[in-house]
Length: 127
Image 1 (cartoon, rainbow, N blue to C red):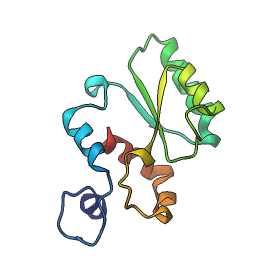
Image 2: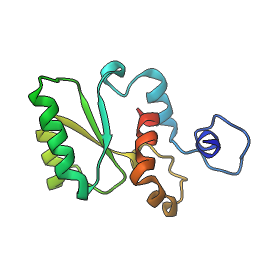
Image 3: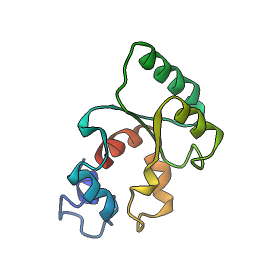
């Protein structure tokens, strides 16, 4: 938690740690520009979880849930025009790459640590 706090610019404890999010991501989060007004479905996915993510969205939509959905990933789903992204878009979900919200000074070697469980809290912080 201290590292996330330091990286998000909320702490001066570790001044040598570059900020985690880009300046535009912070502005979007503060202004509420993430869309949905705080209501919606947010989850993370990867290629090996794509079928389960689509099943979850299909079940939600079958119950009549019309909340906006955001599916976050850390570069795993490829480009917005990839087959996986197209399948999620067809399920009426916005596909967001966490790398776009991260600060450009973040070393590429740390991106691997952002995948998996860490994608979830970071996606919440980025919206």
